[in-house]
Image (cartoon, rainbow, N blue to C red):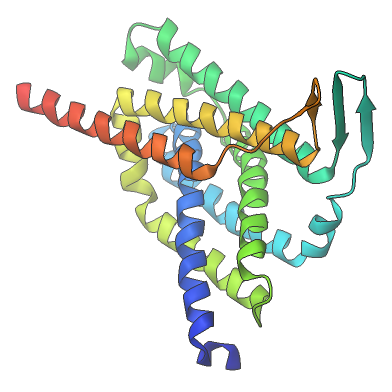
Length: 256
């Protein structure tokens, strides 16, 4: 444990832990919305189990890092003149994950918009099994964990004991998320407008994953490369929208 005698190690650990928490907020929102379809006595269990699975998934991916790096090599290429792409394992995972988020989020929004009675919506939705919820959580955990691990590897590249630092950061961040998952989940699920906003965020994140997957596969439309949407822009839009909605909630509470 000599690596912890250096300041660079602690800076990397704190920075990476904070980053894992920020990236994990998306995961908490998805888990909260999905688990809320279960009976009350199973929601907390599904949330904690989902976060535990996220931690296990990320640690497994960390030990499989050499294989993840190899996924950069294209395995399928298309050249139609106006459209070119070279799919890699990384890009395929991000593309499928983005499409899954788009499908899941739009489906949830449609269900909530079409039913006028919010209470009846919640009752009608709570027919899903714990097994079904866990399967959905596992699928999205893989996507979020993949993106998170690639970011972590890029940040700790060249640092001694990088693997140990990344594993500790993952464990600490998941424990913190487990502690605060219930208030976050209750807040999201008890406020329909916040829930709708959260689903809209997931659509944005899904679109970002698709563009990132297209960029990694060097996709071109009419000789124009698909670029990556800077995550800073996305998080600023989310933070700004959330700030406006918080003011709206405060205003509505004042009027009531």
